Length: 543
Image 1: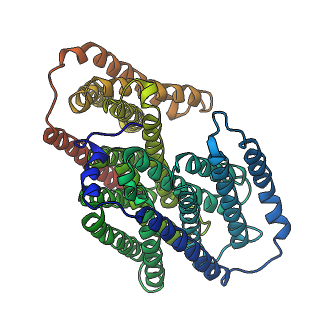
Image 2: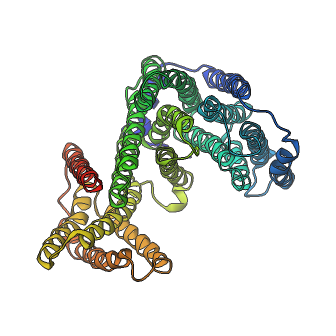
Image 3: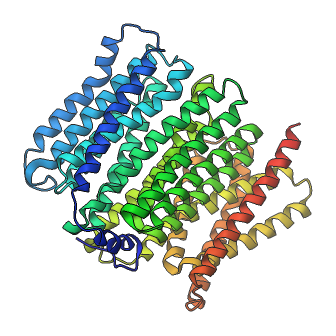
């Protein structure tokens, strides 16, 4: 297997863990996750059950889980083979069996809590997401514990099994599908982080570092539950927004605090707690953006807020990767759940229909981060087949994400121009400004991350253009959206032409790491200022 050098990413953990010698902490942390996950799920489920109206749901529950049960058993039977893509010892199939069964338990529990419809009490609504997170922790930890000698295939099977169940149960009750989806997202994040830890720390003496993701996930689950209880109690006396923020803040502090102790006593690297804190801060920023967007009720402003949220997640990925490579991304995502769980639970408790912009934004944010994590896992798995371990492959992906974000921003900005420019001169001036931004965008990316990031940037623009094609078949031709699209496409083409012509002229224009951080911080600051100004303008126009 491939390992990073001691100077790069997760390799910073290697000397620290070596200094602490061998132990069976890898098994002990597995037992910790299993115990806390099982007790937490049962306890929170019983608390929720006490505030749920009972109705006869046996037939409905059986109808919702039998397809997943049948497919789980069928795949497990097929996996008894040992030829690829199956594995010696049938660990992939056993992991799939555990994942499928855990998913079935999640579906059954969610069906009981939601009853015959999506009606659910406020207290049960606030805590149901925590029951699903504890269950996901239990399943991932159990799979790791059983197959801790060589856990990769079994844990990937577990992730496949629980994801299959979430797919099959997504139709029907909206609340049930959301809860099962949360269980799946949390479990897959733990799984991917654990597999990456095994791949990076590929020595027997480093086994104690394998379940670090399980340790952080256990801490986040307990902290999030405490924060939610405090926030829910406060929402009865204070304004809901203040109570929600207080609950999320307490949860984040209770996660970051113990993580600092882990950094000191177990890991020996302060980057460990750093990425967890960055993940929690990222989730808090996304929650604030979503809440402000929901209050404004202005579609262009909402899209701008979404783009800024994507930029924040991208910045988190860059920082986490600088600290601990792919393992840093995994730890940061788990840290983000310390804000996501109380945020989603408390908002659902106050929402009339159980779903709103904040809940959707938080779930989409952790999903976006998870896709980046899985991308890193793919590169780590197949580094020899891909013919490179070059870290710039990571920046190609970052460039692709930025290409899509910039394209979406151009669509929003041209939409504003078509809406608000009453004179042709004003419209021309705004388009000139956007043209300058289009020309500068690939050059900024080139200075930050090099030509491979620019290649990804062009790929992201192409993906957006494909989505614009699909949009052209669904949007009425006489609407303002069609006009904005026509204004936007020349900007995208111009940006690509600038990248093609001038990238080769700046081969030596590589910035230092400090300069890159300053440039990235400046771009984010400009974006936040622009968003605040746009929000104020949109609020005044709405009055």
